[in-house]
Image 1 (cartoon, one colour):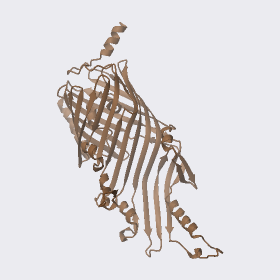
Image 2 (cartoon, one colour):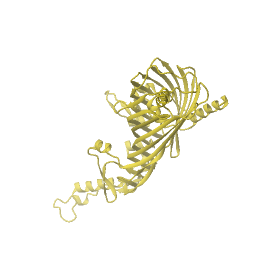
Image 3 (tube, rainbow, N blue to C red):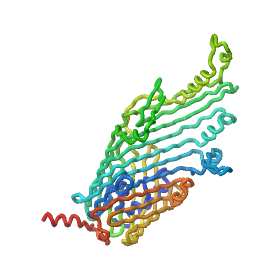
Image 4 (cartoon, rainbow, N blue to C red):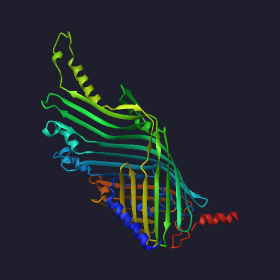
Amino acid sequence: MNNTLKHLFLIVFIIQGIFIFRINAQTTGSLFLLPDNFQSQMVNPAFMRNDATVVIAIPGFAGGTFGNTGNFKFTDIIRRQPNNEMAFDIEHFYNQGVATTKLVDWSSIPYFYVSFPAKEGRLSFYFKEQISTSIQFRTKAIEFFNTGNQYEQYKSFYTDQAQVNASAYREFAVGYATNKTDRLSVGIRGKLLVGVIMGDLRNWEYGIKTSDDGENVELISTGMGRLSLPFETKTRNGKISEINTEKAFSKYMRAFQNPGLAMDFGLNYWFDENSQFSVSVSDLGAIWFHHNAFDINQQSSFNFKGFDLTNTLDNNRTGEYVDSYDLVLYTKDSIRSAFRFDADTARFVKALPPKTVLHYQYNFSDEFAIGVTNQTVFFRQNILNTLSVSSRQIVGSFSIFENVNLNGIDNVSIGGGFQWESSNVQFFLATDNFLAIYHPAKQKTFTVSGGLSFLFNNSENKKRRKGKFTIHLPFFEQKEKLIN
């Protein structure tokens, strides 16, 4: 492929990274410079080792990827007070001038991973947990909840539509990667999914309307969504009244009732002796939620006129006497009911947000390479994106890498990490924001990945690529000799 097309790939990466709104990245961009890394292989099924090594990662050592991103820092809302104690500072947070608050957290935790040579390629298995939460709401609502309707501008106030999404599911995956030609390797992976938690609250809005004379206040709540939890959920009069979270962790880990399927695809193509391009498309699938699943809806209001004490002053308790304690309980329950959503038992299919990764890499030598990586997630009307430029140096058993990440058009982070491999162990640690390791609460965005795998039938002195297209596969050469 000529240089013009290769340059076109780079231009597309840069345009995407600058102009597409970015909320989260799936992993640290530098890891795509390491196709031997077991966590990068879980992102692109075409990545594989070209030797006879058997790779095994087990719980407690397999590590994971953890990330957080938003348009504010946690130190904007939790601040040190004059008495040297940490406390919520709502006023300072509100004064930062952010019109809409956005926050996304995610984690990908592999419990085990196994990869070994099979026929003309490699077979891999893994089991991992995927967890993510996101919230978006009008920042002005924080000031309202802090002050109530005591100021004129808040006499009648609406929070506007808040969006909340939370999900947790598990992947049981089997994948196969092979070299189709001297230039091209391809991979495919099938995944059995198990949905554990799904919460999707759309257009959630709260409001308050104060009458002109100030005699009554109408509380308003609207919204719709879907919900599925691994905990026993009780309803009363069509509304969720109780969620039993006793032994919550045990119930969470034993939840395997909501099945799903998904597929991943990947390829890796060598343009010439030094440059290569890879692409992966993952999470093409969905989960069928049917266990403890609900369609939820909120269209309620309550007109609060204060407490009518007329019938609570009769000490003889005759006639229409109302106990003041019962009056308070009744009013509180009425207010609470206005903010409890209706719930109907349901069954529904929830599609996974598809993900794509584009990666271009140029190897100046066996020891030094640079790469450009673009990760994109398609989520409803949003395209969530991050662009990374990385470099890698190999020094003995160490691979050292650095990355510069463009988050949207106004947030740049610098990260890096290392990978160490011996004949028995591979260990790596990577981040897209060095400052987050020192003080994560002061950063708006960061991703940290790490893990350890055990290697069997591996050689520290395995041959490295010397610029030839033919990939060295000693395992299969020995196998053919035994057959003949």
